[in-house]
Image (cartoon, rainbow, N blue to C red):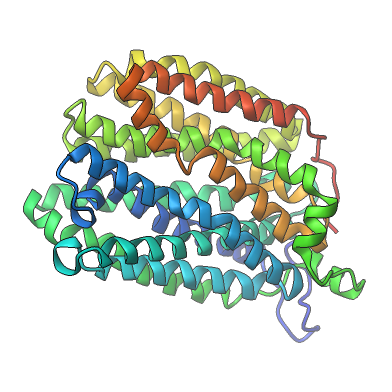
Length: 434
């Protein structure tokens, strides 16, 4: 059934159009990842000095990166909670709830007083709100991917599934673009005192837009069919863990390469570039805004290729390319000049798009309808714990002990893990989502 399928509410309710489905799946992930990347950028630039009292800038940076990792621990919890309701009551209402939780958490960070105003309560509340961000995002991706893929016509599932995967590129561009504009328009004192809060507060406006779009969609045909066949289970999580643990783990390990290459090439590289290479903050943010365009360009190319040739060949090729790219980190990023740093960022983010785009179809294809929301979300977010939660923190330790070549080896090792997992999977291109 295609994107013009009839509504579950009967013939009197308008059907979703292809354009509406695509936009609803895209806009939510764009907003959710905007919120997530706002914090990631702030963690690399300002969270440490504002919320942590350590005298050492290095200790402040490490503390900020630990709070960055908290959300990745929360994300699988969010996928369990929202996955349960997404598989029990439907995709639409669950997606609306996840978007609201993420937006409220992000906006409140923008109003949170720093350590100088309320002492140790400041980092405690920051961790609580960061945990809320993780819970919300944990419930977002699985539903957005299902919204796209469960409406996709035959042979175009990766293309439809690419749109929620494109959302992170746009969210990152909006986030870094706003920080870039602030870096150009504000002096250091203004940015540190109040300017950094603006991107967090802007989240409220974006969430209002996302809610407007999602309130206008109807339930997916695959979920409506599952209701008609009485296929829903009482506890999707228990069914997932007992019967579908193998695809869950394989999906999680397959995601490791995406998370690692992205957060090493953005959060760690931004922190390292500003502090160790002494590249001005505005210059590095500008380079990241350009580099993320390469990620956005790679996404449709990779999705089209995976619809034509299969998920596994495209992802295996991408993992091999990321493995080799780890050896370019020290020669390119370590040079410290604009051309080589820009080249490194463009390569890494292009490869991120290449490995990330097919996941929008692959992970939902691993699971049947009655546990698909839970399974796809848990695999996706468990991969976040394995690949991203500690990646910037570990990279900071590795660069201090062995230099950038050790960080590059870390990226290559992550690619090897995902390559092994993908090699153990079955090809899912021709699976029916019913």
